[in-house]
Length: 92
Image 1: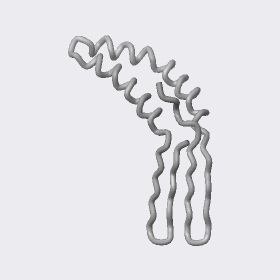
Image 2: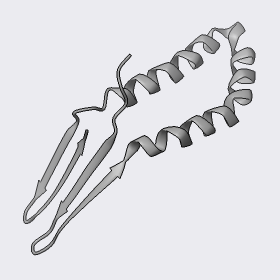
Image 3: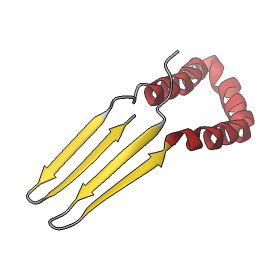
């Protein structure tokens, strides 16, 4: 299994000022786990209700796919330049 990203660095540069912000993504994982535990009964009921139509398995696979997408964000780098302004987002 892939490791989830740890930090996100956002840098916003205007004409005269530059702002750099480090966001610790590893602090979001416990919060996401708590939300998942709270919502798990609803997810279980939805899966049971949707299983006869074939959508229950897809609902469970959607949860797995969202975790895989989050873990695949490591190394993502986005740079946007517009005139004299630029925004850079990188995930470590």
